[in-house]
Each structure stands twice: as C-alpha cells, then as structure tokens.
Image 1 (cartoon, rainbow, N blue to C red):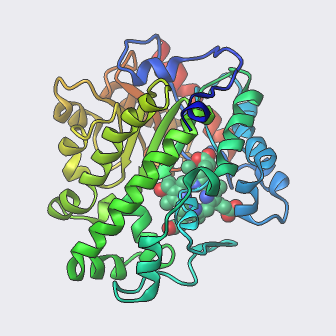
Image 2: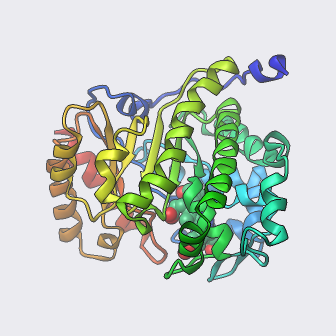
Length: 371
Ligand code: 1CP
C-alpha cells in the first residue's frame, strides 16, 4: 500500500504559481483571481459540451469533466489564476451509499434521505465502510487528466463539501430554505449528528489526500450552509470537523510521501464566527459579500491568514461602472492586493451572467491590483 501511495505523477511544469504563493502568505506582484463555479451554467460552451448528458455522468467521465474544467481557463486566458476540478460536493454522499440525482433546473435530490437515528438508512450509512479510493476513482482520474491538459497554465484546485453542509443535504434530501430536518437533527439528536459528521470528516480527509495524490495543487472545503448555525451551534457542529480536516490532511499527505498543499475553508455566512474561522488551521479563509473587507482585516489582526472573496456575485448583473466601483473598494479594503488576498466572488457565479461581464470583473481586478 505504501508503494501505491508514494507513486507520483509527472506533470508539465507550472507557469503561473501566483495563487499558491499568495495562499502560502507571500507578498506578490498582484492579486490572483479565480471564481467559484467558474465552469458552469453561465457559459454557452458548458451547455454545448454537456449536451443532454446527466450532470453526474459528466462528473464521472474524466474526458468531459476535464473539458468543462478547462473551458473558463481557455475563454478567459491570462485572466484566471486557478482552475477548479469540475465535480460536485455531493459525490461524497454518493460514495457513502446514498442515491443523489441532479434534477434539471431544480438541483440535487436524494430519494432516500436520513430521517432519524432509528431509521435503518442512518445506521446503514454510518456503518458502511467506504473505500474512498475506489468509490471516487473517477474524480482522481479527472484530476490527473486535467493536470496534463492544463499544461502548467494555472494550478488545479481540488475540493470537497464540509461535513456540516454535506450532512444538511443528506438529511434534507436536497436544497432547502428552512433547514427543518437539519435543525431537528442537531437539536433532537446531537450525538447521532456528531457521529455522522465525524464519519464524513474522515472520508473528506482521505478524499482530499487522494485528490492531491492525483494532482490537485490546493484544496477548498465548501461549508456553504455554515451561516445557518448560531455561534454556539457552529462551534459544536461545524468547527470541530473543519478543524479535524485541517489537522489530519497534512499528516495524511506526509504519511503518503506527498508535499502539503495550501488549504482554503469557505464557511459561507458564518461571519459572526470569522475570528474562529481564522483559527481552524487553514491557510485561506473565504468570505462572502456580507463582510466588509476592512472589518475582516481587523478581525484577522496579525494572524498569517489569507482571505478569499468577496464581491456580491450579483454585481455581475450590473453596469461596468458598478463592477469597477465594487472591485475598487474590494481592492482597497483588502489592502491593495500585494499579498494576503485571493480575489474571487463572495459565492459562486450565478446563471445568466454574461461571460463578458465576468471578463470585465477579472480585467478590473488585474488592472487595479497591478498598480
Ligand atoms: O467551476 C466550478 O466551481 C465547478 C465545480 C462545482 C463546485 C465547486 C460544481 C458544479 N459544484 C460545486 C460545489 C457545490 N455543489 C456546492 C458548494 C459551492 C456553493 O455553495 O455554491 C454546493 C452547495 C453544491 C450543491 C449543488 N450542486 C447545487 C446547489 C443546490 C442548492 O442547495 O441550492 C447545485 C445547483 C448543484 C449542481 C451543479 N454543480 C456544479 C454545476 C455546474 C451544477 C449545475 C448543474 C447544471 O444544472 O448543469
């Protein structure tokens, strides 16, 4: 097994390492930029390449997944400083034995979500021994192929969903506005909730390590629903598991004979817990657009944390003037962009944005941080 683990791939040399240097806390010549969900529905070429294929089918086909990953890199050549592997956070619940379908224009659907601790499905999922290398092999293959096709243009980011966010989907059975089931679980069955969160965390560590082995050069943990928790419940149901991942992943990589990679955490909406998020052990903390960069920088103090974000994705529906103004105040707020900040949006880019408006956003970041 040790032999298998240390087997490293040969990849073309990296020509743009700006995002990696920034993530490691170095001073840089300008702010690197990438965009959450940069591959996806707002791009006409995405729909063309996807055709009428099922969403998860695209994730499982390394050729298609790598094509989709590269689309924004090609369209916005020279303007994006990182790529992110085309996949989804819900591949972990699938690997845990749950069925997840992607319903066109509606989003993910679990026909058989976790209803309560004494429902057979809960024990089945909790007790299943998941072979993370085998179940998610298609992701590693997609990463390795994408690294080759990238030809060193920009680094490739691997990712997973945070335990809390994945748990929400597993009990809600899909997207939700009310989080009724999630709240039932944490307030009725806290112990059983924590048992499942721990199980997911262990899978995340192994999954991320195998993504790095396959060629991922940086990783991000998406806690999209962290903002549904109070400071007290965030401490109990999100923080310990995010910290577990940040602590165990470097150890796991060392054990596999691999170099450590920068780690990003995006606890979306958990802005009352930003101080705590800076102590979780990640190099980079993602911010949504409800945080003023100036306040975030104050909260950070002299800790060696890099921020990522954070313009309102909705500004891309606005005028060029609003885009410029938004970028300008973001650049100033984060201190000019010569270090300590990776530019992005405050959440994923939304459908119907015109690709040229994103292009203008990227150009403005480059222009205003290169001065
Ligand atoms: O460029 C990229 O970033 C593409 C890779 C990517 C990533 C990082 C996709 C493709 N999904 C994700 C992460 C993801 N998936 C998150 C975390 C980021 C976030 O908060 O936005 C979440 C919450 C999901 C779950 C999910 N998958 C949703 C949200 C549902 C809800 O609760 O409202 C949806 C709509 C999807 C489908 C999906 N995933 C990715 C794409 C391109 C799509 C759209 C599929 C389609 O309709 O064609």
